[in-house]
Image (cartoon, rainbow, N blue to C red; front, top):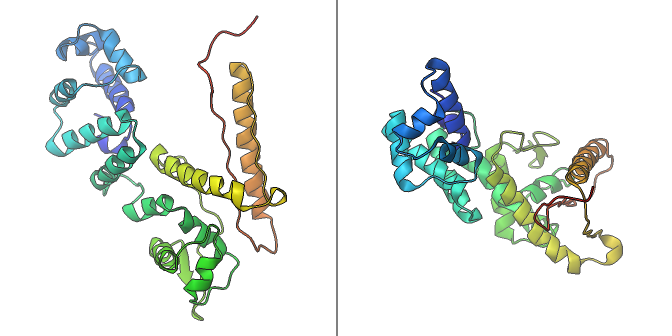
Length: 276
């Protein structure tokens, strides 16, 4: 069966595992599996996989028995269900950290230290400052360069964490350099990590709205009526523009400032049929 520790989405795990069972034995249809799990119809199983219905605690245990999951696998499956079905971001973070422990040694994933990097907005800010500032151990000066200002202890904590994670290294003269000019979360990083980054930067964006003069910042908002196709086109253009900005920064010279760029696009209404 599919390696459970390679998944963070239990619905995807179920879909792939069911597909493997059916490939090995044609009798393993959704209808057959639903009967084995004591479900009234295969449709309910489909709804669970599609995300329109959730697993109950009772059904979780039935699936564990049906798949003959071992103790470690069973606990991980329960964590996956909790991670996917909870709507609380903080709860997702807590469950995800527990999942990482189970994944360790099984698949390549974020370790707890790397997860911490995305948990503190000022870590990435300090790393960006060190890209151009010849830091010589003056943590008070370093802390004062970040807006909104962080404490000396936070600056010290950030440098220590960045060095431990391998994002920076200490030169012979005591200064620090980046191990790589640019880093990315990559396509495999789970959504809870990305959500943490977005939530943290949204908080400092609200502060920036009032901290800086209008000519020093750029804030705008649009509320639009669009088709599904138009919505997707806007999303694609934003993605393209984000990549364009990254390339602009890579080619930038005489760097001497850190800035934050946020993009938001989300529905403000339930989708419906448009006019012909």
